[in-house]
Image (cartoon, rainbow, N blue to C red; front, top):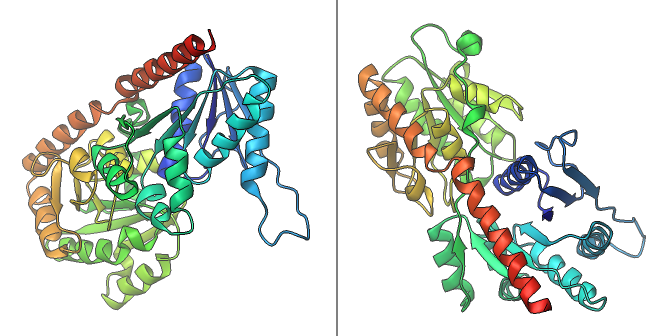
Length: 378
């Protein structure tokens, strides 16, 4: 198959999933063409069957905001015609699904019928998509995609109810590459002294992640046992969190590591992962932690309960209930035998979301969509 993949090239969940899926398909022998404004951060362009096509937006004085959607549509058309793509898979509705629709219409004028798969990841629906400026365009793009998937049942229901979608949406959950998580204690002493528990949080530090709650829950933990908190990522709430830690007198126990390519290694030395988000349509960061055998304490919002099983792989609580999250965290960490049981169950749950389990579902979807398009073409 010749597959086009369109997504954001950043560290965000949708971009990571798009990149990992494309690389998985390339390893299966399919040719995969990534189309974006920048090379995806996890993409290895030296791997066989992988191609990257940059979308260039020309700076023109007339435009206050550069028309990226137009440039993206044009690039999709160009790549499709040159490399004879069989399908384009767009991740995140805005603006990719809309741009794909325009590309598809342009291609039809040249008697080239290109199926488009749209995968909804979360904030493209739950936050950005609800903005009145985008709502009708998002709804139109969903209804005019060949196939639509969502990463959780929760997100599927949110999409159907909010946009009054009549079409079917197929749930294919996010996945994790378990081969990335290999026990490595060598760097543990860089972050914690002997006997200290390592608590970790990874995000883009936006308000929706409720970063102050991370600090509050950790404060509860460190009052009950020696512990350090590793904060991975960057964003607008970072300095607020830093000041909060200083005000609580725990600044020496909270380490901000910024954007790092060593997320997997750090998770492998962690004892607990915190994710108290306002909303999570899936909770990929939680799944990645569980892939490393790390139990999770999280909010129970959106798709998180489909990933983090309360009392089994960790604990969930109502959004903002930091007392309950703190109690759950201490309960897991205060007993080594109990911690090991949670670790084992977290890893076992992650195996259900292995790329080797989920990847073939995408392969089957591509094959089905392409075969159906060939039938329509006669």
